[in-house]
Amino acid sequence: MALRAPRVGVALLGGGLGERLQSPVPKALFPILGHPMIHYSIRLFSSMAEVSAIYVAFPEFHISALEKALASYPRGALREIVAGGPTRAASALNALRAMERSAPEVVLVHDAARPCITVQEVRDLIQALEGHDGAFLAIPAVDTLWSVEESAVSGAVDRSKMVQAMTPQAFRYGTLREALERGLAEGFDGSDDVSYVRRMGGDVVWVKGDRWNIKVTYPEDVQVAEALLGGKGCA
Image (cartoon, rainbow, N blue to C red; front, side, top):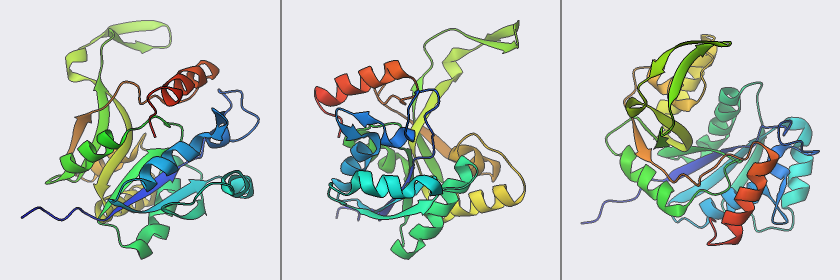
């Protein structure tokens, strides 16, 4: 008998204001091939039967602009846009709290600035979560890594034991919510959601992702994303 697929909710984070991208609008609204960047993630997750609901966390002052930008697109699995918090973790927690009514078993946390995620990567990630508290996409480090402090070099880092983390990151809903609530209450400032779950003693594994799952940060990244999305299509 085939195992029942877990009910999956998505917390889609669009908090970047786009300074490094030199964008006049929040980064998630920056046009990629004529569409707001966040549209690609919403479209992809909405195409997956496993995903029951998407909740977007967005800077409160810009929510009306996001609603306007998405008005002409199908909402798909998008259920609600909630105000983001002062930190990435606070924004993710706001989305998880709103998501509670959808009763997800698994939550995927994804950055809207990564429009080139693929269905296969997401499914590999959900499958890898089985038996663990968390899982995240990553690629092995391929360049030489040095530990530095300002301009001083202190030593080489063994890259065979290093991976570059990406999103989505997948967790049991209750596990991530507890980890974020506890971490924020105790003043912990983690770099991603994995850091909060690991701090609580959670068992987290990594899954090899696609190197083309880029994070759009600088103007030149837009050209790469457009080449990918305009070619085989990532969403």
